[in-house]
Length: 232
Picture 1 (cartoon, rainbow, N blue to C red):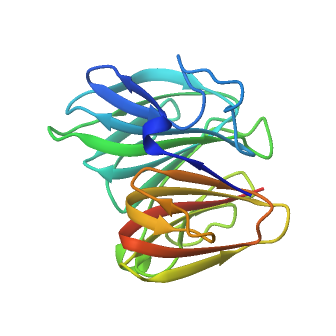
Picture 2 (cartoon, one colour):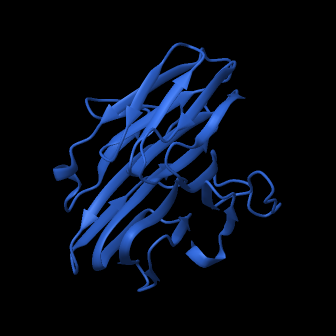
Picture 3 (cartoon, rainbow, N blue to C red):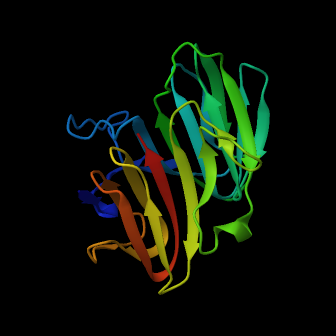
């Protein structure tokens, strides 16, 4: 089954310095029918003004992944970790038993990013942080893992049975993803447009939540950049 959610149907919030769209219930947006997709709890599509950001605040028992799409993001946390990430990099923070962190835009240009939260497989973990680089050339025509339970060079580790892939396809280029029965697929179009199994078209910032489907056939309706998450 494929459930489509259009970009314009997501909850939009404008806080002046922060403009964001929520894919799941978050903050002042509450929908009891849109709380989660498997262990996935949050996807916020954020635009942060220059020299602004999220001041120090606490989290616990959550895996938090940030993918920067434009600009830069500076991370600092109570474990002593500090890093600045941009496009071609991913940061993963395991909040575990508790951590305080800030996420600030250190530059003058707007920073655009995806902030995602996932429940961990195991609770009570020691807080940890990791920033990793991935090869932008390897996005072309393939699903490139950037976060996974099975880390590797260029693939950040996460404490959940899942993998986040990024891919870039040129118009007309096909790609197929297969997975075992009983798993889920979350698909999010960052740029361009994709055609799915049944010919359904996903435009920029549209998403698909896929269940009971072991094979997902994609084709780029135009040059596209997208994210695919394999979830339990």
